[in-house]
Amino acid sequence: MEFPLQDEIKSLMEKNRRVKGGFTYTVPSPEIYPFQWLWDSCFHAIILSYFGKNEAQNELRSVTSHPLPNGLLPHIIYWEDGYHKKNWGRELRGDILNQSWGIDGTSAITQPPIIATALWHVHTMHNDIKFLKELYQKLRTYYLCLLAERDPESSGIVGIINPDESGEDNSPRFDRAQGLPERHTADQNLNKRIDRIRQNRECNFNARDCMRQHFWIKDVAFNAILVRGLEDMAHIANEIGETEDHDIFLIQQSRTKKAMRKHMCEGGFCYSLDDDINKKIHIDTWNLFTPLFGGTLTHEEADTLVHDMLLDEKKFWSPFPIPSIAQNESCFQKNDFWRGPTWIAPNWFIYQGLKRYGYEKAAGELRDRTRSLIERSGFREYYDPRNGKGLGANNFTWGGLIIDMH
Ligand code: GLC
Image (cartoon, rainbow, N blue to C red; front, side, top):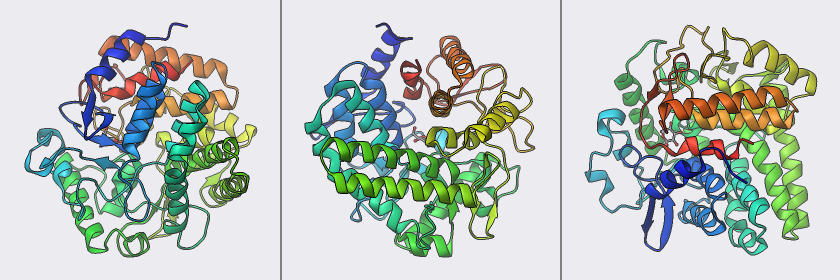
C-alpha cells in the first residue's frame, strides 16, 4: 500500500535520525530541537512503524532509556554532553532549552502520556510480544506514578506542574496561572517559564509541593490522552498475560474518564481546571476535541461538539484547520506558536477522535486539508491557519503523522 508523502517522510525521518551511546532516536528539527522529546518520539514511533519494525522499536527504546528516579519519563533527553554550554535555537527559544533541571542529561518534568498508545500501535503493525514485554515495566511504572503523584486528592484527574508538560508551552490557558496578561511578548512568556523551572527546582520537582505552592493545572488534553493511554496499557497487559494489571488499568481508565466528565465537562465541552482558583479555564482551544480521542464523550455530546465547534468556520474550521485556538477568541493570534497556529499532531489527535466516533466525512476532509497544507508549505513546525504559510522550525517531523491518517 502507498501512503501519502511516503518518500518525503522517509527521507525527513532519516535526516533527523541520530545515534548516541548505542541508542537511536529522532530529533524533531535539527536546528531548533536537537534533542529527544517524549511525545515527539511517540509520534516518531508511529510514523516509523510504516517503514520498519526496528526503526519504530528503537525510537521507543531510546525514549524510555532515562526514567527519572520516581519512574516518570522525562520530557527531554539531551544525549549531548555539554548541551547547556551551547545556545541551541536561542534566537527562537531564548534560554529555555539551556535550563538546569537539577539533574544530568534529562529534564525533570514529563509530557502527555501517549507512550502506551504508541507502543500498542507499533505492536498492531508488527506483532512482537517480546518487545511489549521488554518495555512493559517501564511503562507500567510511568503510568502508575502519574496516577499516584499527580493526583494527591485522589480525584481521578492528574495535574501538571509546568506549562511545558502539556506540550503547548505558551497556550493562553496558562496565562492566568503564569501571571501574564492576554497580550504579551514571546520574551515575557519565556521569562515566566524560566521562573517556573526555577520554582520547580525549589520544590524539588515534588509534584505535591510544586502543585500546592506554584502551579497546578488539570489539563484536558493531558487527561484525555491519559485515558486513552490507560486503555492501551490494558490491551498491552492482556496481550502479555498480565491479567491482573489489565483489570487495574481498565479500572483506572474508567475512573479518570468519569472524573473528567464530572469536573471538566458539560454537554460535551471540556475545559482545563485552574486549581489555584478552583475554576474552569473557559478558553476554546483544540483541547476541546481531545475527549474524542480519549473516548470520554457520549455520541450526542460529540455531535454538538463537532457541529457547533469543530466545523464552525468562525471558530475552528479555518481554511487550513485546526487552529490551536478558536479564531473568535480574543487571545487568538494566527502566527504565535500555541496561541492560534495549526499544528499537525493536534490534527492527528482530532482525526483519530473523529474516526473513533464515526465522523468519516469530517475526518477525510481534515486529512485532505492537512495533506495539502504540507504539500504547499513543507514540513514546518506550525502554520498560519488562514493562509497556510509555514512557520517556526523547518524539517519538523510532526507532518509525518499524515502517514497514519488513513
Ligand atoms: C515545542 C513544543 C512541544 C514539543 C517540542 C519539541 O516545545 O511546544 O510540544 O515537544 O517543541 O518538538
